[in-house]
Length: 274
Figure 1 (cartoon, rainbow, N blue to C red):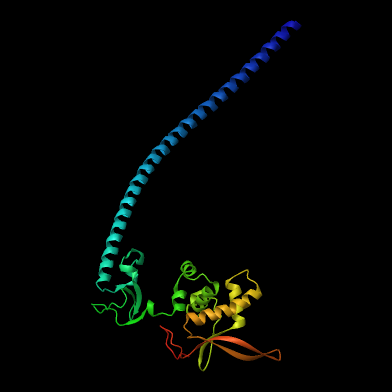
Figure 2: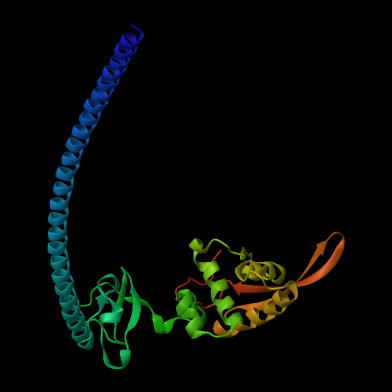
């Protein structure tokens, strides 16, 4: 009797185990089917993306070919325009600055100059009168500028190539600070009577230290004198140095000032200003 119950229990256990294994097998098969379905979907997406990549690569190649063709055409047109403008300049034409790529123009000895007329700026060969008489009278040519004005109009790289000495470059920057409000750091002050503008030697020293970070106070003092000498020479002595006695904390002291007289003959500027 005991053996019969043991055998029956054993059979029940086996049946339960078989049922559990069957359930697990069905679950695993379901998971496998789900994974196969997901894999098929991913493969389809990959195929679509591969086709999209092929389309994009074809479109990119087409656009690159169009861009290259357009660039070649633009360069060819630029060369043609440069050649035409060069020939027109040689004939005496005055060409509006905004329409000319100075680097693309080729004239004998590179003798192109920038001039300012009543209405706008133009390029021409030196001393060539405009046969069409457009734009009004010539008010200022690059060659008419003072050396300090020419240096001040250059960008940093051009100025460094044209002037090796630091005081010379500082003189150009100082002049530009006076005439170009976009510079921002302007040590000049408005004068009165016979002085249009001036800058104190002490203010100039601090300005130099701001423009040239890292230099010592002692070296900045030396640069003040050298910068003043440079701007006097480059302005052809349109500026001058005057000494002014002032009082501070009850004590008198004399300080140099770099001044621009109101009657200074500066090309492009009206003498006798406020």
